[in-house]
Image 1 (tube, rainbow, N blue to C red):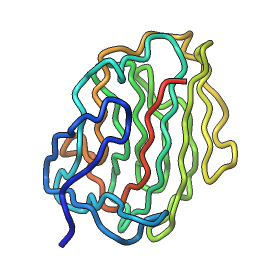
Image 2 (image 1 turned 30 degrees about the vertical axis):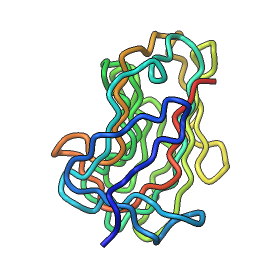
Image 3 (image 1 turned 90 degrees about the vertical axis):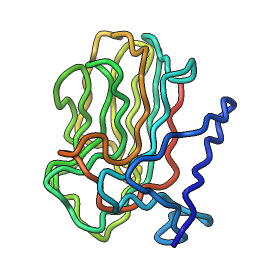
Length: 178
């Protein structure tokens, strides 16, 4: 069994709240070290709102690596909800979406498969234009949210609600301004 000590390496060094018994596992990590094993029921880690999660109308970047053990009907990866306009990365079957501003806005892929490593990055520039990369390649076009304010965000990695579980591993999560 792995450890349940997740580290926030940001300048804020926040301690996450763990739910549903996520653990650190030595495989299948993308880099040396550990990755988050979110194969448990409702397994997630979350960070309550704090100044580092208030993005205003400025740039935001969310990046992570994920490998699914099995594809459930919905797999939650990163959920920034705290407001209805906040971004969410998740799958419905084999389709990977960026949900923001109350709807699916970018479809990154329709061929996500279990047992494969994926590097995912979504970002919004200062003018409100969202774009996405899947394994380093532009994916799914763009979406302009008109630079809506993203304050009051709560960062959740893994399952956010019982409908959206995560059966797999999430590694190297980065949520940043700019």
